[in-house]
Length: 280
Ligand SMILES: NC(=O)c1ccc[n+]([C@@H]2O[C@H](COP(=O)([O-])OP(=O)(O)OC[C@H]3O[C@@H](n4cnc5c(N)ncnc54)[C@H](OP(=O)(O)O)[C@@H]3O)[C@@H](O)[C@H]2O)c1
Image (cartoon, rainbow, N blue to C red; front, side, top):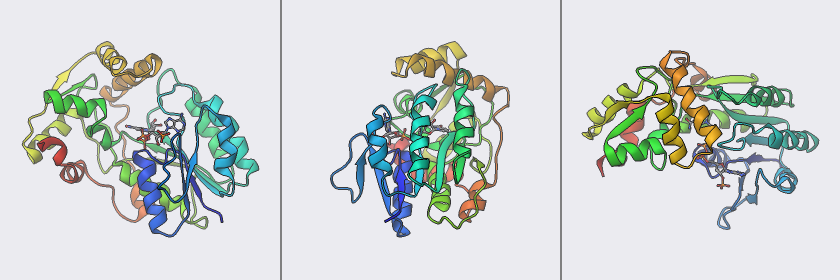
């Protein structure tokens, strides 16, 4: 029976996407390096093991594609997967990409172009995830331990989006092949927000005092490396903060409303839904 292969199906976005699809009666296959025996349709899938690509795609006519994470050059692994997907007859392929193009990662643009060249290929360019404010993300761990956000982004704003809204947007495109799809969507929350504004909202709503420590890009890169990120990825992520600080990433769209029929969640709603994170 045709259905949706959800790569990254155990992650923040993929897990919600699987739930939404299954609630709508759509078959969703959860791809994971460690497939859960209790899941109704699990499959072993590892980007580093191309022999897992074919069995994962077998019988599927749609794919949610989460490229290899924490990599500045995912294309060499994604390219053969795309060829296989096309041979397998996949009719819609929705990739979770990023609104921000990582510096030193030129293949991201080429990868998006290759996805869009696939039958039914769609790229979701997602803004920063509000879920970065939840543990175990290093940003959230720091808030939890020290009541502090360390950032090189200054007062620059980003159109933070709730991963649940990304999942709902992807579900709208994957549940029904009859739905018209563009090849590119910028997926954001309802408005731009800086780190100091985020700190204010958390403090006002939960009583947890959060202050902002302004650091340099080099200090940010060192902190990312210390949290265990691959060095090239840590440096690229720190360089992103310069773009945010300079206002280059301050953009919002209406794509979530267009795709799901309801506006994206605000950061205040997100904080309210996860208040336990800052009150325990
Ligand atoms: N955080 C942000 O602000 C932000 C903004 C824009 C875009 N993004 C993009 O969003 C993506 C992360 O999405 P997410 O937060 O929903 O995921 P996540 O919660 O970080 O989970 C990562 C997923 O990737 C899977 N995975 C890891 N290594 C794998 C491998 N070698 N082979 C196959 N699967 C592997 C994991 O599955 P298993 O462990 O079960 O194998 C898991 O399902 C990243 O690509 C990032 O670039 C993030």
